[in-house]
Length: 161
Image (cartoon, rainbow, N blue to C red):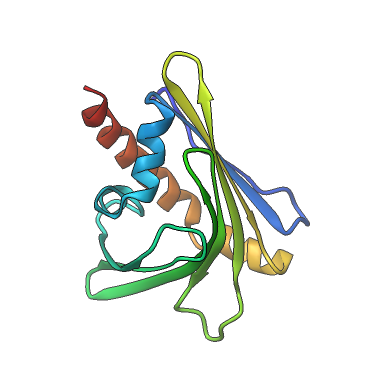
């Protein structure tokens, strides 16, 4: 695979970065991140079914979705603070399966136009604590992100042709 997902989580820091390049125009990659009919097709690990319960991809809008596999359901939700097409999104992300609430992640995703009709996505997540960040990394998040971006690559190939 030409494009590899890179997750950078420096020891002792409350943030992580996810960087990925795509062989598709920035507008296509942006649309795949903001259109619920496309988003549901690629986010998350292979073998999981995604259902969007709420989707308002505007400044101040909120979202909630679930992933399901083998009778287990995992819910995620958040609020969009800024949606600036096709450049950046800033918002919160929270997993609805932890013993207590309050493990909110602030995220910023930028969409950089590259030469040759390509795009680089850089996502920064900032956590309340190093322990929260490390817990997310240890949860298998990297596999889920990599699987999702593989599915996005395939979907973008069909949009691009």
